[in-house]
Amino acid sequence: MDFNDTAEEAKFRAEARAFLAANCAPKGSDKERLSRRLSTDEYVKAAKAYQKKKAEAGFAGITWAKEQGGRGLPPIYAVIFNQEEAKFDAPSQPFAIGLGMCVPTVIAFSDDATKDRYVAKALRGEEIWCQLFSEPGAGSDVAASKTKAVRDGDDWVINGQKVWTTGAHFCDFGIVLVRTNPDVEKHKGLTMFIVDMKAPGVEVRPIHQASGGREFNEVYFTDVRVPDKNRLGEPGMGWNVALVTLMNERLAVGGSTGPDYAEIFELARNMPGPTGQGTLAQDEAFRQKLADWIVKAEGYKLSKFRTMTALSRGQTPGPESSIGKVINANHLMDICNTAIESMDHYGIINDGELAPMEAAFHQGYMWAPGLRIAGGTDEILKNIIAERVLGLPQDVRVDKGVAFKDLPSGR
Image 1 (cartoon, one colour):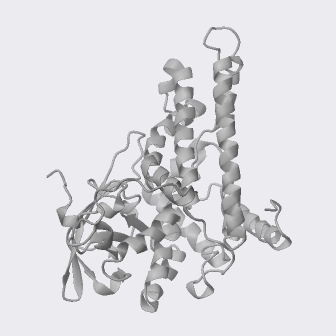
Image 2 (image 1 turned 180 degrees about the vertical axis):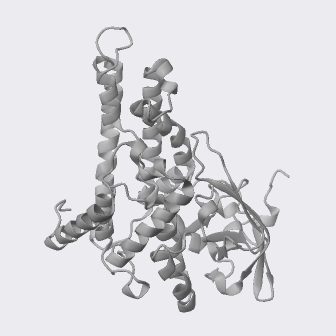
Image 3 (image 1 turned 120 degrees about the vertical axis):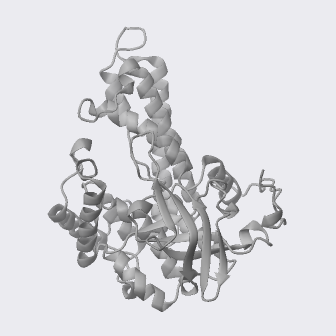
């Protein structure tokens, strides 16, 4: 592909820069960022105000159809805006899952009345969405979900538990995948619904993470009633609906944030080597590791260019988007682990004001294991890459052709 902007893309990039410069501060140190300075409620309020401005300026739903409030532009324009927005301290994170995964699924699988009710409000930042897929007994095997829904007149009644639900504690709506038929294979008995997160019977319990963050939640459903009009797709076809959401999710979490080889090289240039002679950056073993990290980072960058090429041609990224997540999560963990071990006792410091660089590696190390799980574990994604990208034979699946109710559960 041509890595330079076309005249139209350059004009759009200039418009995006002007909007961002007028509405956001440039990205400064970690401790100066809005997410650090504001409480959760204050940050969500700031995010809603920013999202409203984005919608009014035409920078929300850039690829969405005009009848859905978008601009109907090719996906490369969304990539350009995201590149520019990443340079600013923009409070956009609360909308990443809703507008990136949930609402596009609603647009793809609901009727006009449902879209009229939800899409515009989400785009303007008036309502925030979450995705309710993971369960304690299912993990990355989303098709093994046990949370069930039973038809009762015009409603469905949901009972069960979801886990690792990002942002559920401040979200207004979610898309939930539930089992509606246990008598067929696990992939064939699922259905997806829109659920009101404030409905009676929905209980959200925040999970306190090792890093100190509280982004994730457990969500319990006790006799929660959902009208049939909130169903996305036909009963039993929820797996096909979920695939659309999951593909967007794996693309979204493929680009991780955190310290990279440049940061650890900077650290190593100012740190004594393991023998006490010279700096760590001059140590032969460290330099070999550094070379490996650079090769992986450059390889991933080229892989992203392939995705951007597909987007610039109006194509939808396929299963190859899983590659980025597998590489980035392990890359981040390896770099942060090496940095913390190299710093010896100083590696335990997790105070951004006292020692910003040490804290950044500490935070990255604590976050990386979660990144390896989010959007599918390494093992699940490697299977996808092997089977759907490389065309290798399918893994052995003992549950094939077996009704979900007959699968061994260990209970």
